[in-house]
Structure formats: structure tokens, C-alpha cells
Amino acid sequence: MKTLIVLALAGLGAQLVDGSLGMAYGVTSTTLLLALGTNPAAASATIHLAEIGTTLASGLSHWKFGNVDWRVVAKVGVPGAVGAFAGATVLSNLSTEVAAPVMSLILLSLGAYLLVRFTFRGIDRRNLGKPVRKRFLGPLGLVAGFVDATGGGGWGPVGTPALLASGRMEPRKVIGSIDTSEFLVALAASLGFLFALGSQGIDVAWVAALLLGGLVAAPLAAWLVRHVPPRLLGSLVGGMIVVTNSRTLLRSDWIDASDPVRYAVYAVIYLIWAAAVAHSFRQYRKDRAQESADALAAEAARLAEQPELHTPDAADVADLERSLRAGRPADPRD
Image (cartoon, rainbow, N blue to C red; front, top):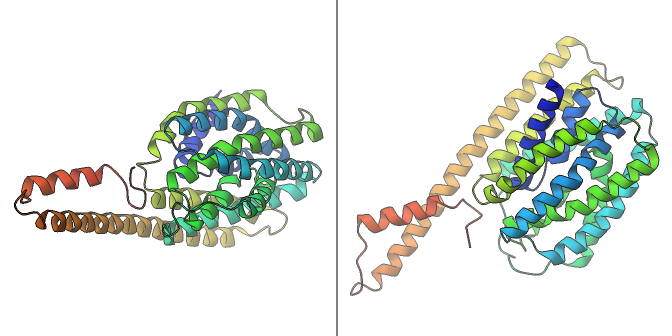
């Protein structure tokens, strides 16, 4: 019973992160299942079965809040489904001894990418509004779907940053479209695992617990997408994934590190993680202050051009500052 409660809470937390950041449900949940000793293929199958429900709920929630571009969903989701089915087939045919460290290595790489990506990089908005090309979305979906199935997660960590980096879509629509298209990926990966494995190693109660937690969090996450600082959340989640999968790799037959070596590596990772989170928070505060100052200056300049109509006073400045605090840096409200 305790395990089911933990899984439900993990599903809730993972969906809150995924729905507001556009990634990390599968990576976070798979990391937990591997830590509990689940077979890698069964872990990925369990997660993808749960994701059929959570991604459907998340997609509907994002659609309700106007966060979905359906053209992007179709162009990236269909190739993603093909890649996911192929990835599920490949993972199902690997032995546990090989699959466990391989999956941990993939998860570690994705976690490190999340940590670096959201600690040091902002969002390029210069190409905002330009159409996203099909020749870009097709290969992106194929690769992201394959990585997602073989690594137990990866659709968001591959797809979301790639679309954000293009600068052609609003961040909230990138997140909403990636989350919605993941339904096709989860469905295809689940079919691939069921064809290759049957129900072997899949605990229906675990699937239900993860699904329940995700369903509770999905509507809240779609609303939070405009309010949660992505840099800070990305650094926190990325560091957690790196720490957990580093432990798996260091204890695997590939490395089999001694206790002193493992503890030294853990200490370095924790220090880097703490520094990354602190930097992300400082940068978030800096960006927020700069955008507030720029907006105040622009408003003051606009009002100064019309002195006969209105002269800004302290109350006007306070009202503007409150309205700015209602949004978030690099992702203003419409």
C-alpha cells in the first residue's frame, strides 16, 4: 500500500512538472520505478500505459486554456508514434543486464541536458509567429519518440527544447502542443510493449496509481504553465534525475565503483546541482526585475508624450508593478 501511495504522489508531482514545463513525466517516473527494482522494459511499459490517460487529460486541459497548436500536434505526433513503437520493440528485446544501465545512461543524459538547458539558457523569441516547418517536425518526432520508448521518457526533453529553441512558437503553446501530441506517442509505445512483452512484468495497480496522480495534477499543471518559472523548475528536476541515475550507473556491472568513489561523485553532483539551482533563481529574479523596469520605462515614456491627458503618479506605478507580477518573465500573458 505504501508503494502505491508513493507512486500516486510521484505521478502527481511528475505531471505537475510535465504539464507546466513540457517534459519530465516519463523521465521522473521511470527513474523511480528503476529505483524500486523494476525491469527496464516493464518500467517503460508501465509508464507509457499510465501516460495514455495522463496525456489525454493534459491535452484536454491545455486545449481548454488555449495552449495547443493542432497543426504542430499532427506533424510531430505521428512520426513520434512511429519512433515510439520502434523504440519499444528494441527495448523489449534487450536483456535486463544490458537494458538497465543503458536506460540509466539515457536518463542521466536527459537529466544533464535539462539541468544545463534551464540553468544557462533563456528563450529566443526573435522568430515568434513564424510557421514551424514539417521537415523539422517530422525527424524531431521520430527521434524523440524512439528515445522516449527506449529511455522510459524523452519526448518532452527532446521535443520541447527543440521547439523553444526555434523561437517560432509561444512557450505555452510549445508545452501544450508537446503534451497533447504525447498521447499518440504513449499509445504507440504501449502497443509496442504489449506486442513484444504481453503483460509480463506490468503491475496494473502501479499503472492505476501513477495514472490517478497524473489525472489529479493535469488541470492544475495546464493552469500553472503561465505562472511557474521554467528555469528554476528545470534545474530542480534535471538535478534530481542526474543524482538518481548516477547512483544506478555507479552500482552497475559497467562501473561497479567503490564506496569512496561513489560518495565523492555524489558530493560533486550535489554541489553542482545546488549551484545550478541558485544560479537559476538569481537569473529568474534578474530577468523579472529587468522586464519590470523596461515595462515601467516604456509606460512612463508613453504617458510623458501625453501630459495633457495624464501624469503618472505613485498609484499608477504600483498598479503596473502588480500587473507585471501576475505574469512571468520570457512568457508574458496574451
